[in-house]
Length: 246
Image (cartoon, rainbow, N blue to C red; front, side, top):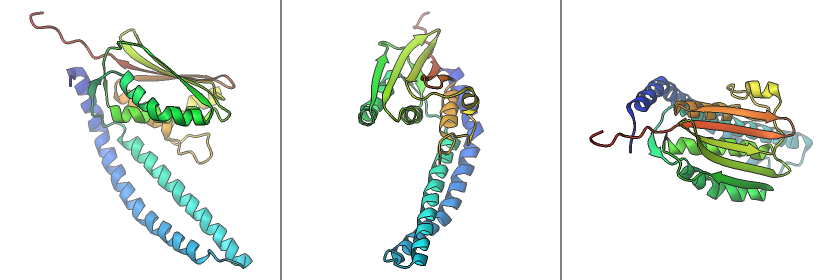
């Protein structure tokens, strides 16, 4: 594993900034999960009691229990998303070929995409220079962006993955043929808790941005309603170590 001093210093600054937040988030999650689990368990017991409901009153009660169970599930999803967001600044960096985690991700994502009528087209440049990467968090970036792309193509479409080198940066682009976004949505898409999806947590894209920037990278987006979306992510190339005697 190779890391240069600049990247190590940047990583340490990010870790110092977010360690306390992640710790508080973990404590908060524990405090919320305990009563949430108790509520969910009691709702299951109530549901069991109401399975043989035959009066209008009991059926109304059953519907209310189902509503509460759905909302408990939504709270659990939001809680998990918040934890991912809070912990996104803590990196375990190593020198990596960006193509490798992309290929690994596509191996399990492609069948799901094709099952929903979306053609996945990778264009991965050969011999990319290495970047410093937390592979686990990078997989989270790929998952968030790819699932957003699938949701933007409910009737099928095309999703391209491009990698290449440009001006000392390694670049990944995800390009979909989905519904696209208007200017107002684009201006707010990285805001915490902003979402245009019913039941969305509004933490997916903010988490992606936070992870990319924690790596010293940049994320940009181009989109137009009816014409799809292009996300461009770039990371600095790992500097080449000088040879002995140079």
